Length: 183
Length: 362
Image (cartoon, rainbow over all chains, first blue to last red; front, side, top):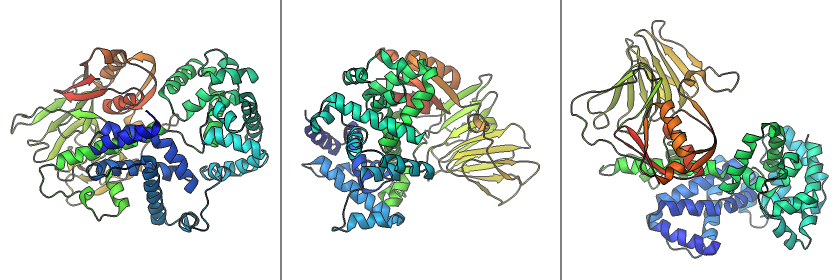
Protein backbone atom coordinates (compact mmCIF):
# COMPACT_ATOMS: atom_id res chain seq x y z
CA UNK A 1 0.00 0.00 0.00
CA UNK A 2 1.18 3.49 -0.72
CA UNK A 3 1.58 6.14 1.93
CA UNK A 4 -1.58 7.84 0.66
CA UNK A 5 -3.67 4.65 0.68
CA UNK A 6 -2.39 3.86 4.17
CA UNK A 7 -3.60 7.16 5.49
CA UNK A 8 -7.00 6.80 3.86
CA UNK A 9 -7.40 3.37 5.40
CA UNK A 10 -6.39 4.67 8.82
CA UNK A 11 -8.83 7.54 8.45
CA UNK A 12 -11.72 5.18 7.76
CA UNK A 13 -10.74 2.95 10.67
CA UNK A 14 -10.46 5.98 12.92
CA UNK A 15 -13.98 7.04 11.97
CA UNK A 16 -15.11 3.57 12.98
CA UNK A 17 -13.55 4.09 16.42
CA UNK A 18 -10.26 2.21 16.00
CA UNK A 19 -7.76 3.83 18.38
CA UNK A 20 -4.77 1.97 16.93
CA UNK A 21 -5.55 3.54 13.55
CA UNK A 22 -5.28 6.95 15.20
CA UNK A 23 -1.80 6.14 16.49
CA UNK A 24 -0.80 4.70 13.13
CA UNK A 25 -1.97 7.84 11.36
CA UNK A 26 -0.06 9.88 13.91
CA UNK A 27 3.17 7.97 13.39
CA UNK A 28 2.75 8.17 9.64
CA UNK A 29 2.23 11.91 9.48
CA UNK A 30 4.08 13.22 12.54
CA UNK A 31 7.33 14.29 10.89
CA UNK A 32 5.51 15.86 7.92
CA UNK A 33 3.23 17.86 10.19
CA UNK A 34 6.13 18.90 12.38
CA UNK A 35 8.17 20.22 9.45
CA UNK A 36 5.12 21.97 8.02
CA UNK A 37 4.43 23.63 11.37
CA UNK A 38 8.06 24.62 11.90
CA UNK A 39 8.01 26.49 8.61
CA UNK A 40 5.04 28.50 9.85
CA UNK A 41 6.38 29.31 13.27
CA UNK A 42 9.81 28.65 14.70
CA UNK A 43 8.76 26.99 17.92
CA UNK A 44 9.04 23.24 18.07
CA UNK A 45 7.24 23.12 21.42
CA UNK A 46 4.19 24.93 20.15
CA UNK A 47 4.02 22.82 17.00
CA UNK A 48 4.36 19.58 18.96
CA UNK A 49 1.64 20.64 21.39
CA UNK A 50 -0.66 21.56 18.55
CA UNK A 51 -0.11 18.20 16.87
CA UNK A 52 -1.03 16.39 20.09
CA UNK A 53 -4.05 18.60 20.45
CA UNK A 54 -5.10 17.99 16.86
CA UNK A 55 -5.06 14.22 17.32
CA UNK A 56 -6.82 14.43 20.67
CA UNK A 57 -9.58 16.33 18.96
CA UNK A 58 -9.72 13.82 16.14
CA UNK A 59 -10.24 11.12 18.73
CA UNK A 60 -12.74 13.25 20.61
CA UNK A 61 -14.79 13.75 17.43
CA UNK A 62 -14.05 10.51 15.59
CA UNK A 63 -17.70 9.53 15.39
CA UNK A 64 -18.63 12.71 13.56
CA UNK A 65 -15.64 12.93 11.20
CA UNK A 66 -16.46 12.95 7.50
CA UNK A 67 -14.77 10.96 4.77
CA UNK A 68 -11.76 12.82 3.44
CA UNK A 69 -10.06 12.27 0.08
CA UNK A 70 -6.69 13.78 0.93
CA UNK A 71 -5.95 12.99 4.56
CA UNK A 72 -2.56 14.74 4.86
CA UNK A 73 -3.97 17.91 3.27
CA UNK A 74 -6.81 17.83 5.78
CA UNK A 75 -4.35 17.44 8.65
CA UNK A 76 -2.10 20.24 7.38
CA UNK A 77 -5.05 22.62 7.17
CA UNK A 78 -6.29 21.63 10.60
CA UNK A 79 -2.82 22.06 12.09
CA UNK A 80 -2.43 25.46 10.50
CA UNK A 81 -5.74 26.57 11.98
CA UNK A 82 -4.71 25.15 15.33
CA UNK A 83 -1.40 27.01 15.23
CA UNK A 84 -3.12 30.25 14.25
CA UNK A 85 -5.54 29.92 17.13
CA UNK A 86 -2.73 29.29 19.56
CA UNK A 87 -0.62 32.14 18.25
CA UNK A 88 -3.57 34.48 18.36
CA UNK A 89 -4.33 33.34 21.85
CA UNK A 90 -0.82 33.87 23.04
CA UNK A 91 -0.69 37.03 20.93
CA UNK A 92 2.98 37.22 21.49
CA UNK A 93 4.17 36.25 18.08
CA UNK A 94 2.57 39.10 16.18
CA UNK A 95 4.96 38.91 13.33
CA UNK A 96 4.13 35.27 12.73
CA UNK A 97 0.39 35.88 12.76
CA UNK A 98 0.88 38.67 10.34
CA UNK A 99 2.95 36.44 8.11
CA UNK A 100 0.42 33.64 8.18
CA UNK A 101 -2.73 35.69 7.64
CA UNK A 102 -1.48 38.34 5.29
CA UNK A 103 -1.85 36.72 1.89
CA UNK A 104 0.56 39.00 0.07
CA UNK A 105 3.35 38.77 2.54
CA UNK A 106 2.95 35.05 3.11
CA UNK A 107 6.27 33.33 3.11
CA UNK A 108 7.77 30.37 4.83
CA UNK A 109 10.61 30.71 7.26
CA UNK A 110 13.93 29.76 5.74
CA UNK A 111 15.81 26.76 7.03
CA UNK A 112 18.43 28.91 8.77
CA UNK A 113 15.70 30.98 10.42
CA UNK A 114 13.98 27.86 11.71
CA UNK A 115 17.00 26.16 13.24
CA UNK A 116 18.04 29.40 14.92
CA UNK A 117 14.57 30.27 16.21
CA UNK A 118 13.95 26.92 17.88
CA UNK A 119 17.07 27.28 20.01
CA UNK A 120 16.44 28.78 23.41
CA UNK A 121 20.00 29.65 24.36
CA UNK A 122 20.80 33.19 23.16
CA UNK A 123 24.51 32.60 22.93
CA UNK A 124 24.01 29.46 20.90
CA UNK A 125 21.64 31.32 18.58
CA UNK A 126 24.32 33.89 17.91
CA UNK A 127 27.02 31.35 17.26
CA UNK A 128 24.77 29.24 15.07
CA UNK A 129 23.87 32.28 13.02
CA UNK A 130 27.52 33.18 12.54
CA UNK A 131 28.45 29.61 11.73
CA UNK A 132 25.71 29.20 9.12
CA UNK A 133 26.98 32.31 7.35
CA UNK A 134 30.26 30.58 6.61
CA UNK A 135 28.58 27.78 4.65
CA UNK A 136 28.04 27.99 0.91
CA UNK A 137 24.41 28.02 -0.35
CA UNK A 138 25.05 24.57 -1.77
CA UNK A 139 26.17 23.23 1.60
CA UNK A 140 23.17 24.74 3.38
CA UNK A 141 20.81 23.23 0.82
CA UNK A 142 22.26 19.75 1.26
CA UNK A 143 22.34 19.99 5.06
CA UNK A 144 18.68 21.07 4.95
CA UNK A 145 17.69 18.13 2.75
CA UNK A 146 19.56 15.73 5.02
CA UNK A 147 18.71 16.92 8.53
CA UNK A 148 15.50 18.89 8.14
CA UNK A 149 13.69 17.11 5.32
CA UNK A 150 15.14 13.78 6.39
CA UNK A 151 16.11 12.56 2.92
CA UNK A 152 18.63 9.75 2.50
CA UNK A 153 21.98 10.37 0.81
CA UNK A 154 20.69 8.45 -2.19
CA UNK A 155 17.60 10.63 -2.47
CA UNK A 156 19.71 13.76 -2.12
CA UNK A 157 22.10 12.54 -4.79
CA UNK A 158 19.38 11.88 -7.32
CA UNK A 159 17.58 15.13 -6.50
CA UNK A 160 20.69 17.21 -6.94
CA UNK A 161 22.16 15.20 -9.83
CA UNK A 162 25.39 14.22 -8.19
CA UNK A 163 26.91 11.07 -6.82
CA UNK A 164 26.16 9.78 -3.36
CA UNK A 165 29.79 10.21 -2.47
CA UNK A 166 29.79 13.88 -3.43
CA UNK A 167 26.58 14.51 -1.51
CA UNK A 168 28.02 12.82 1.56
CA UNK A 169 31.31 14.68 1.31
CA UNK A 170 29.61 18.05 0.92
CA UNK A 171 27.56 17.44 4.05
CA UNK A 172 30.55 16.06 5.92
CA UNK A 173 32.61 19.15 5.14
CA UNK A 174 29.75 21.44 6.13
CA UNK A 175 29.40 19.74 9.50
CA UNK A 176 33.13 19.79 10.03
CA UNK A 177 33.14 23.56 9.49
CA UNK A 178 30.09 24.09 11.70
CA UNK A 179 31.51 21.99 14.48
CA UNK A 180 34.69 24.00 14.58
CA UNK A 181 32.76 27.25 14.90
CA UNK A 182 30.29 25.93 17.44
CA UNK A 183 32.88 24.50 19.80
CA UNK B 1 35.38 9.41 5.20
CA UNK B 2 34.72 8.08 1.75
CA UNK B 3 34.67 4.57 3.13
CA UNK B 4 32.03 5.44 5.64
CA UNK B 5 29.83 6.84 2.89
CA UNK B 6 29.66 3.36 1.44
CA UNK B 7 28.70 1.60 4.62
CA UNK B 8 26.09 4.10 5.77
CA UNK B 9 24.01 3.58 2.73
CA UNK B 10 23.76 -0.10 3.39
CA UNK B 11 22.18 0.62 6.75
CA UNK B 12 23.50 -0.35 10.12
CA UNK B 13 27.11 -1.37 10.02
CA UNK B 14 28.55 -3.18 12.96
CA UNK B 15 32.21 -2.60 12.24
CA UNK B 16 33.77 0.83 12.23
CA UNK B 17 31.96 2.79 14.89
CA UNK B 18 34.84 2.51 17.34
CA UNK B 19 36.91 4.82 15.18
CA UNK B 20 34.12 7.29 14.47
CA UNK B 21 34.41 10.87 15.61
CA UNK B 22 31.46 13.20 16.22
CA UNK B 23 31.23 14.22 12.57
CA UNK B 24 31.17 10.60 11.39
CA UNK B 25 28.34 9.79 13.78
CA UNK B 26 26.39 12.92 12.86
CA UNK B 27 26.66 11.98 9.19
CA UNK B 28 25.57 8.38 9.77
CA UNK B 29 21.99 7.78 8.61
CA UNK B 30 21.19 5.14 11.18
CA UNK B 31 22.53 7.40 13.91
CA UNK B 32 20.40 10.25 12.60
CA UNK B 33 17.30 8.05 12.70
CA UNK B 34 18.19 7.15 16.28
CA UNK B 35 18.45 10.81 17.26
CA UNK B 36 15.09 11.56 15.66
CA UNK B 37 13.56 8.32 17.00
CA UNK B 38 12.38 7.46 13.52
CA UNK B 39 12.74 3.70 13.65
CA UNK B 40 12.66 1.48 16.71
CA UNK B 41 15.34 -0.72 15.15
CA UNK B 42 17.87 2.11 15.05
CA UNK B 43 16.88 3.33 18.50
CA UNK B 44 17.42 -0.09 20.04
CA UNK B 45 20.64 -0.65 18.17
CA UNK B 46 22.19 2.64 19.28
CA UNK B 47 20.98 2.44 22.85
CA UNK B 48 22.63 -0.93 23.02
CA UNK B 49 25.82 0.17 21.31
CA UNK B 50 26.16 3.30 23.42
CA UNK B 51 25.64 1.40 26.66
CA UNK B 52 28.49 -0.89 25.66
CA UNK B 53 30.85 1.93 24.74
CA UNK B 54 30.85 4.37 27.63
CA UNK B 55 34.22 5.65 26.43
CA UNK B 56 32.41 7.16 23.43
CA UNK B 57 29.88 9.07 25.54
CA UNK B 58 31.33 12.52 24.93
CA UNK B 59 31.65 11.94 21.19
CA UNK B 60 28.09 10.62 20.98
CA UNK B 61 26.75 13.57 22.96
CA UNK B 62 28.41 15.99 20.59
CA UNK B 63 27.09 14.16 17.54
CA UNK B 64 23.57 14.17 18.99
CA UNK B 65 23.87 17.87 19.62
CA UNK B 66 24.80 18.48 15.99
CA UNK B 67 21.88 16.42 14.69
CA UNK B 68 19.52 18.17 17.09
CA UNK B 69 20.69 21.61 15.97
CA UNK B 70 20.42 20.90 12.27
CA UNK B 71 17.09 19.09 12.45
CA UNK B 72 15.51 22.02 14.33
CA UNK B 73 14.78 19.76 17.31
CA UNK B 74 12.50 17.46 15.39
CA UNK B 75 13.24 14.53 17.71
CA UNK B 76 11.25 12.94 20.50
CA UNK B 77 8.41 11.50 18.47
CA UNK B 78 8.07 8.74 21.07
CA UNK B 79 7.75 11.18 23.93
CA UNK B 80 5.13 13.12 22.02
CA UNK B 81 3.30 9.91 21.16
CA UNK B 82 3.20 9.13 24.85
CA UNK B 83 1.63 12.51 25.58
CA UNK B 84 -1.05 11.70 23.06
CA UNK B 85 -1.62 8.21 24.43
CA UNK B 86 -1.84 9.57 27.96
CA UNK B 87 -4.28 12.25 26.89
CA UNK B 88 -6.47 9.74 25.13
CA UNK B 89 -6.36 7.23 27.96
CA UNK B 90 -7.41 10.01 30.32
CA UNK B 91 -10.17 11.08 28.00
CA UNK B 92 -11.45 7.52 27.75
CA UNK B 93 -11.34 7.01 31.51
CA UNK B 94 -13.27 10.22 31.89
CA UNK B 95 -15.87 9.10 29.38
CA UNK B 96 -16.14 5.80 31.22
CA UNK B 97 -16.59 7.54 34.53
CA UNK B 98 -19.23 9.78 33.02
CA UNK B 99 -21.24 7.18 31.20
CA UNK B 100 -24.50 6.73 33.00
CA UNK B 101 -24.24 10.19 34.48
CA UNK B 102 -27.08 12.30 33.14
CA UNK B 103 -25.45 15.66 33.85
CA UNK B 104 -21.79 15.52 32.93
CA UNK B 105 -19.87 18.34 34.55
CA UNK B 106 -16.79 18.10 32.47
CA UNK B 107 -15.53 20.76 30.14
CA UNK B 108 -14.89 18.30 27.33
CA UNK B 109 -18.55 18.06 26.60
CA UNK B 110 -18.98 21.82 26.50
CA UNK B 111 -19.17 22.63 22.79
CA UNK B 112 -18.61 26.34 23.10
CA UNK B 113 -15.67 26.16 25.44
CA UNK B 114 -12.66 27.89 23.92
CA UNK B 115 -10.29 25.54 22.27
CA UNK B 116 -7.50 26.11 24.70
CA UNK B 117 -9.66 25.33 27.65
CA UNK B 118 -10.64 22.04 26.16
CA UNK B 119 -7.02 21.25 25.61
CA UNK B 120 -6.22 22.18 29.17
CA UNK B 121 -8.92 19.82 30.36
CA UNK B 122 -7.51 16.95 28.40
CA UNK B 123 -3.89 17.73 29.12
CA UNK B 124 -4.48 18.08 32.82
CA UNK B 125 -4.64 14.34 33.02
CA UNK B 126 -1.39 13.80 31.24
CA UNK B 127 1.45 12.17 33.09
CA UNK B 128 -0.84 10.80 35.74
CA UNK B 129 -1.73 7.38 34.53
CA UNK B 130 -0.73 5.13 31.77
CA UNK B 131 -1.50 4.42 28.12
CA UNK B 132 -3.36 1.28 27.27
CA UNK B 133 -4.00 -0.19 30.68
CA UNK B 134 -7.20 -1.94 31.43
CA UNK B 135 -8.31 -2.06 34.98
CA UNK B 136 -10.51 -4.76 36.32
CA UNK B 137 -11.58 -4.51 39.89
CA UNK B 138 -13.33 -6.92 42.10
CA UNK B 139 -16.89 -5.72 41.65
CA UNK B 140 -18.04 -6.46 45.14
CA UNK B 141 -15.77 -5.28 47.89
CA UNK B 142 -17.30 -6.29 51.17
CA UNK B 143 -19.87 -3.58 51.79
CA UNK B 144 -19.51 -1.44 54.84
CA UNK B 145 -16.14 -2.87 55.74
CA UNK B 146 -12.96 -0.84 55.63
CA UNK B 147 -10.23 -2.27 53.45
CA UNK B 148 -6.81 -2.19 55.12
CA UNK B 149 -3.58 -2.51 53.17
CA UNK B 150 -0.30 -2.98 54.97
CA UNK B 151 3.17 -3.09 53.45
CA UNK B 152 4.52 -5.21 56.29
CA UNK B 153 8.25 -5.86 55.98
CA UNK B 154 8.39 -5.25 52.23
CA UNK B 155 10.45 -2.17 51.36
CA UNK B 156 7.67 -1.12 48.99
CA UNK B 157 4.21 -2.38 48.21
CA UNK B 158 2.19 -1.18 45.23
CA UNK B 159 -1.59 -1.16 45.12
CA UNK B 160 -3.88 0.15 42.45
CA UNK B 161 -7.02 1.44 44.13
CA UNK B 162 -10.49 0.88 42.67
CA UNK B 163 -10.46 4.39 41.17
CA UNK B 164 -7.27 3.67 39.22
CA UNK B 165 -4.98 5.65 41.51
CA UNK B 166 -1.65 4.03 42.29
CA UNK B 167 -0.25 3.98 45.80
CA UNK B 168 3.21 2.82 46.76
CA UNK B 169 3.47 2.09 50.47
CA UNK B 170 6.77 2.16 52.31
CA UNK B 171 7.60 -0.64 54.72
CA UNK B 172 5.46 -0.89 57.84
CA UNK B 173 3.04 1.67 56.42
CA UNK B 174 -0.71 1.20 56.31
CA UNK B 175 -3.59 2.70 54.40
CA UNK B 176 -7.19 2.15 55.26
CA UNK B 177 -9.88 2.87 52.68
CA UNK B 178 -13.14 4.33 53.93
CA UNK B 179 -16.33 2.39 53.45
CA UNK B 180 -17.78 3.19 50.02
CA UNK B 181 -14.42 4.14 48.54
CA UNK B 182 -14.93 5.05 44.88
CA UNK B 183 -18.70 4.65 45.25
CA UNK B 184 -19.50 7.39 47.73
CA UNK B 185 -16.13 8.99 48.46
CA UNK B 186 -12.41 8.67 47.96
CA UNK B 187 -11.17 8.93 51.52
CA UNK B 188 -8.41 6.95 53.09
CA UNK B 189 -6.20 7.20 56.14
CA UNK B 190 -2.46 6.71 56.23
CA UNK B 191 0.05 5.77 58.89
CA UNK B 192 3.66 5.73 57.74
CA UNK B 193 4.72 6.89 54.30
CA UNK B 194 3.22 6.52 50.84
CA UNK B 195 3.57 7.83 47.32
CA UNK B 196 0.30 8.66 45.56
CA UNK B 197 -0.42 8.96 41.86
CA UNK B 198 -4.06 9.97 41.84
CA UNK B 199 -6.55 9.84 38.99
CA UNK B 200 -8.91 12.72 38.45
CA UNK B 201 -12.47 12.55 39.57
CA UNK B 202 -14.21 15.86 40.13
CA UNK B 203 -17.15 14.18 41.85
CA UNK B 204 -15.18 12.62 44.68
CA UNK B 205 -12.05 14.48 45.75
CA UNK B 206 -9.26 12.23 46.92
CA UNK B 207 -8.62 12.86 50.62
CA UNK B 208 -5.79 11.45 52.72
CA UNK B 209 -6.28 11.62 56.49
CA UNK B 210 -3.27 11.51 58.74
CA UNK B 211 -3.05 12.12 62.45
CA UNK B 212 -1.73 15.63 61.90
CA UNK B 213 -3.48 16.77 58.70
CA UNK B 214 -6.05 16.17 55.99
CA UNK B 215 -4.77 16.37 52.43
CA UNK B 216 -7.26 17.01 49.67
CA UNK B 217 -6.42 16.29 46.08
CA UNK B 218 -7.89 16.59 42.62
CA UNK B 219 -5.59 14.42 40.53
CA UNK B 220 -1.92 14.63 41.29
CA UNK B 221 1.34 13.01 42.34
CA UNK B 222 2.62 13.42 45.87
CA UNK B 223 4.31 11.78 48.80
CA UNK B 224 3.00 11.81 52.35
CA UNK B 225 5.10 10.93 55.33
CA UNK B 226 3.09 10.51 58.54
CA UNK B 227 5.06 8.30 60.87
CA UNK B 228 4.04 9.89 64.12
CA UNK B 229 0.93 11.46 65.48
CA UNK B 230 2.67 14.76 65.73
CA UNK B 231 3.99 15.49 62.29
CA UNK B 232 3.03 15.01 58.64
CA UNK B 233 5.16 15.91 55.66
CA UNK B 234 3.43 16.39 52.31
CA UNK B 235 5.65 16.68 49.22
CA UNK B 236 3.97 17.57 45.95
CA UNK B 237 5.27 16.77 42.46
CA UNK B 238 2.43 17.48 40.06
CA UNK B 239 -0.99 19.04 40.31
CA UNK B 240 -2.32 20.70 43.41
CA UNK B 241 -3.12 19.62 46.96
CA UNK B 242 -4.74 21.39 49.82
CA UNK B 243 -3.54 20.60 53.34
CA UNK B 244 -5.71 21.22 56.37
CA UNK B 245 -3.74 20.69 59.56
CA UNK B 246 -5.93 18.98 62.12
CA UNK B 247 -7.11 20.88 65.16
CA UNK B 248 -7.07 24.15 63.30
CA UNK B 249 -10.44 24.80 61.79
CA UNK B 250 -10.67 26.38 58.42
CA UNK B 251 -6.99 27.03 57.91
CA UNK B 252 -5.95 25.59 54.58
CA UNK B 253 -2.60 25.65 52.83
CA UNK B 254 -2.38 25.05 49.09
CA UNK B 255 0.80 23.47 47.78
CA UNK B 256 2.26 24.06 44.33
CA UNK B 257 4.38 21.45 42.51
CA UNK B 258 7.86 20.90 43.96
CA UNK B 259 6.88 22.25 47.35
CA UNK B 260 6.52 20.48 50.63
CA UNK B 261 4.80 21.26 53.87
CA UNK B 262 5.50 19.90 57.31
CA UNK B 263 2.54 20.11 59.65
CA UNK B 264 2.47 19.13 63.27
CA UNK B 265 3.38 20.50 66.64
CA UNK B 266 5.22 23.51 65.29
CA UNK B 267 2.07 24.58 63.50
CA UNK B 268 1.16 25.96 61.07
CA UNK B 269 4.31 24.83 59.29
CA UNK B 270 6.05 26.65 56.49
CA UNK B 271 5.99 25.77 52.83
CA UNK B 272 9.46 24.84 51.57
CA UNK B 273 10.92 23.70 48.25
CA UNK B 274 11.68 20.01 47.82
CA UNK B 275 15.20 18.86 48.62
CA UNK B 276 16.96 18.33 45.32
CA UNK B 277 19.75 15.82 45.31
CA UNK B 278 22.91 17.68 44.25
CA UNK B 279 23.98 14.80 42.04
CA UNK B 280 20.91 14.04 39.93
CA UNK B 281 18.66 17.00 40.79
CA UNK B 282 15.85 14.65 41.74
CA UNK B 283 13.80 15.24 44.86
CA UNK B 284 15.15 13.36 47.86
CA UNK B 285 11.67 13.00 49.28
CA UNK B 286 10.87 10.17 46.91
CA UNK B 287 14.26 8.56 46.55
CA UNK B 288 12.80 5.58 48.41
CA UNK B 289 10.22 4.93 45.74
CA UNK B 290 11.97 5.88 42.51
CA UNK B 291 13.57 3.00 40.69
CA UNK B 292 16.29 3.28 38.13
CA UNK B 293 16.30 0.33 35.85
CA UNK B 294 19.18 -0.18 33.48
CA UNK B 295 18.30 -2.81 30.97
CA UNK B 296 20.54 -4.15 28.32
CA UNK B 297 18.81 -6.43 25.88
CA UNK B 298 16.90 -8.38 28.52
CA UNK B 299 13.69 -10.37 28.08
CA UNK B 300 10.51 -8.94 29.56
CA UNK B 301 10.26 -11.90 31.92
CA UNK B 302 13.49 -10.88 33.66
CA UNK B 303 12.54 -7.20 33.69
CA UNK B 304 9.14 -8.04 35.17
CA UNK B 305 10.90 -9.96 37.94
CA UNK B 306 12.95 -6.90 38.82
CA UNK B 307 9.90 -4.64 38.80
CA UNK B 308 7.97 -7.12 40.92
CA UNK B 309 10.73 -7.12 43.50
CA UNK B 310 11.18 -3.36 43.57
CA UNK B 311 7.56 -2.25 43.63
CA UNK B 312 6.13 -5.09 45.68
CA UNK B 313 3.35 -6.27 43.41
CA UNK B 314 2.97 -9.61 41.69
CA UNK B 315 3.44 -9.63 37.92
CA UNK B 316 2.22 -12.57 35.87
CA UNK B 317 2.19 -13.36 32.15
CA UNK B 318 -0.91 -14.41 30.29
CA UNK B 319 1.12 -15.09 27.22
CA UNK B 320 4.25 -17.13 26.64
CA UNK B 321 5.47 -15.10 23.69
CA UNK B 322 5.49 -11.76 25.51
CA UNK B 323 7.95 -13.11 28.08
CA UNK B 324 10.61 -13.18 25.40
CA UNK B 325 10.24 -9.64 24.08
CA UNK B 326 13.59 -7.97 24.60
CA UNK B 327 14.30 -4.43 25.72
CA UNK B 328 17.22 -2.08 26.23
CA UNK B 329 17.38 1.30 27.90
CA UNK B 330 17.31 3.12 31.19
CA UNK B 331 14.01 3.70 32.89
CA UNK B 332 13.30 5.85 35.89
CA UNK B 333 9.87 5.82 37.41
CA UNK B 334 7.99 6.09 40.65
CA UNK B 335 5.28 3.54 40.01
CA UNK B 336 5.24 0.22 38.22
CA UNK B 337 2.51 1.49 35.91
CA UNK B 338 4.81 4.20 34.62
CA UNK B 339 7.69 1.77 34.24
CA UNK B 340 5.55 -0.62 32.18
CA UNK B 341 4.26 2.29 30.21
CA UNK B 342 7.76 3.32 29.26
CA UNK B 343 8.56 -0.23 28.15
CA UNK B 344 5.41 -0.37 26.06
CA UNK B 345 6.73 2.45 23.94
CA UNK B 346 9.62 0.50 22.52
CA UNK B 347 7.72 -2.70 21.88
CA UNK B 348 4.03 -2.83 22.63
CA UNK B 349 2.19 -5.21 24.98
CA UNK B 350 -0.88 -4.88 27.18
CA UNK B 351 -1.23 -5.06 30.91
CA UNK B 352 -4.07 -4.99 33.35
CA UNK B 353 -4.76 -5.24 37.05
CA UNK B 354 -6.67 -8.20 38.32
CA UNK B 355 -7.04 -9.22 41.95
CA UNK B 356 -4.05 -7.21 43.03
CA UNK B 357 -1.76 -8.62 40.36
CA UNK B 358 -0.50 -7.13 37.15
CA UNK B 359 -1.15 -9.31 34.16
CA UNK B 360 0.89 -8.84 31.00
CA UNK B 361 -0.33 -10.08 27.66
CA UNK B 362 0.20 -9.43 23.97
